[in-house]
Length: 144
Image 1 (cartoon, rainbow, N blue to C red):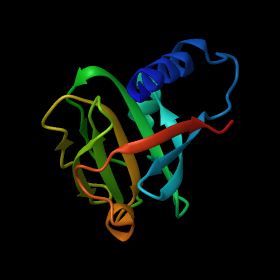
Image 2: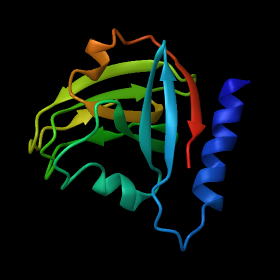
Image 3: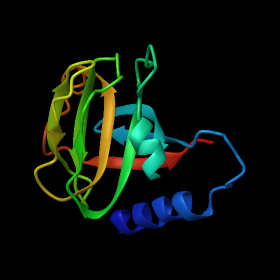
């Protein structure tokens, strides 16, 4: 039931957001007993830009990438100077892979299996918060 809610939520964000608004869409994500605020990257343009050309990211902030069901996305760090950790998340909201990425690297980090979401955070955030592969996203709520 939660998964169906998330799918409806994401489709609502993608298809019904105000096109003329330049406001960044954000969500509050709960994993275990930890919370963070993430910008949403749903369009091809937002996903291509990601966190490139930024100098910092807040302690409990990140970016949530939304993909079509069954996607096998790959990420790299071209023009990204912030060290990041990346979690790939499947259709059941389970983290299936976590990788650390080196700033300005062209090394690709791929999901290796179908996923619906990917979450970028400051490098080490998952480890510092004792979040591992197998953990589930408990909730995702829009904050603006």
